[in-house]
Length: 165
Length: 165
DNA sequence: ACTTTAAGTCAGCCTTGTTGACTTTCCAAG
DNA sequence: CTTGGAAAGTCAACAAGGCTGACTTAAAGT
Figure 1 (cartoon, rainbow over the protein chains, first blue to last red):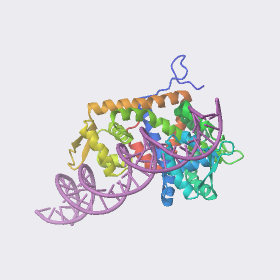
Figure 2: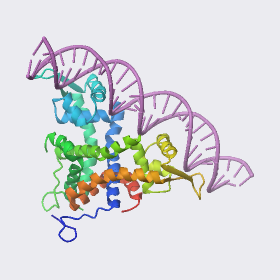
Figure 3: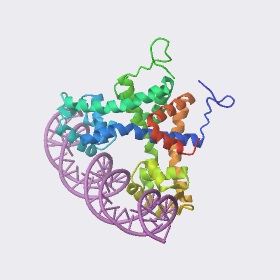
Figure 4: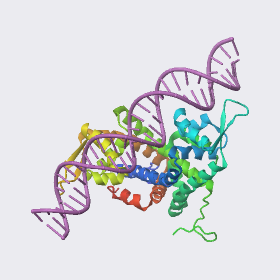
């Protein structure tokens, strides 16, 4: 692998404080931009970021159970329920009793749910696509590598659970 | 600039929906991990993420004015003030009357403020450093490129305002 | 029959964001 | 030198979305 280090070193990166701080700030600003577009859309529909996250992962894994969604989102049952309830009442999400295990509720998006999810996702993907095109394929690979390394083993497991590319 | 056209093109990016969604999820999970370590520390001190952000940027640009900080953080005056007040009361931040313009308050960290900032930052930098080392220098460059492209011109301006690497 | 798991609910709390209205202090331009 | 606007700060009220704790119901598992 590309080496930059002194003699014999694997890859001595010059990780100055400054560089790391710039990375931290880049995360901060980029995340803000990253959520800004869907946030605008959500507001028009009277929803918040929490609703978006639920819609996203239900769309990704149709039929997932509440417990799984809980683990993926990393929030409490009570917190999720508030959000999930409105989505179900509004007819965006459907909760079907599990076939093998009748205690489980398997979550699905309705047509309306899929429509909103698509709109939200499209806003977000638009920005992501633009950034990818501006930065180029090499950069994209690096971007993903760093993010995956940053999330640590536990979250990486959840990350990989999601329908693969 | 990098082309994506078919024959002879630089590098055709296969920006499938799936890839973009994976990128979105990577941001989601990575950001969670990214804030988790300082969050733990903050909790012990009775502060929240908002305090961290204020400390970070005051440390970065000692003597910045409230208006500037407002712009950088992207929150309302009232929201910032609540946080800033406690930090000042607790002796972590000092607010000095501007020399040229006496309406301004220039913000500085006290010794105690610097100490906490260092601890918080160190937690965060630790994770960042590990991710960087795991991914390698090439990946790091790409990571930054994509994030910068993602934040858009307005935030990028603020980003660059911060003390350069 | 008993225990555990999945889901859901009620109540209450906290942080951090928002609006809107208003004051004080100070600079700067007319 | 007055007056308009900018910088800071404050009060009040509200909402989203986290949290804990306690408890119920239904269905599995043992």
